[in-house]
Image (cartoon, rainbow, N blue to C red; front, side, top):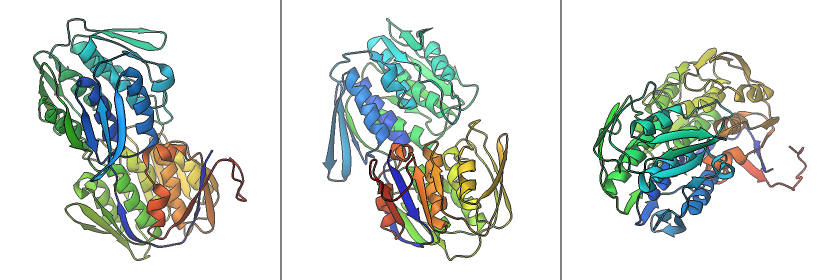
Length: 432
């Protein structure tokens, strides 16, 4: 397996352009199942997750063309017909979000067989809310041998979908399913994330009738068919927040371009509270830290517009060198502190009890071999390594490749000493 080696202690200076959002791109790709005309997505990230999903979509009948457009990477997806309504386990297990093909397949063909995605390293994340939404829309759901069998031979019909708890994935799935249903659907207690708004905007360009995306209540009036469209993927707010925290950890001044500060405002406010300099622009944000000791702060993860759970691990890394004690409460996932033991290998002082972590700031971190356990945990180790003395080697970086495009290149351009050690190349570093 590839590894990444970081030599810490170098201030970051420069510009980092933010890529298109992974969490939005994969749902936009799924939307291509809803029409027989081309869907052209620009500002597309090139990631392991988008490659996994492209493989599954091709199995279902989607023609996928990746190319370089005038504005950067783009992907054109065309589905003249669904050649298979079966999404097998060997593909769905590689990326949980691929379960969302179920609704569009059902909406377009009246039937689908999709593998249950199984558990997850950061929590079980059951799909019960997804299935609840589809049943409300008139689907017959059967579970057998690890697969969901869904049928709606007469098509889906509009319904009231009231989620008992906020779920981004279930809200997106309900949207993708309701756009071709007969009549009106009302989705209440809907997630409000920017990725939900992005998906709704794309679906509207395809001819869907959607109101209220970005609010707790979304109304969808079904249409008979959708057309092709062109849509630019929204900037990745998690990538932007990650590099903002990396710049604060290492010190220096970094401008993040092609992004939206309002999408990470909850993070930026906490960074300012900790003593980090933040400058907001319309489509950029500048992070400044002159080397002064940061202050410990408290955070609690929450659905948007609250503090994103996908930035919790990275913020914990920053707090390892802050003055005093920081308290981090995780309210979204039940098992999302697996990065804490790896951070302690670098010298951090962290204690975890249930959904709460207490981080007592230390004077310095020291490089060591560490292991990535999930996507966001892996990048928290990279952030900590930027300020650690000596060299840190992060193992199992395939997690990083799922969600961060050209990470080494972007950090190196700002002066970081970071390099990838390819599998099979010893390079004098202990193997995973």
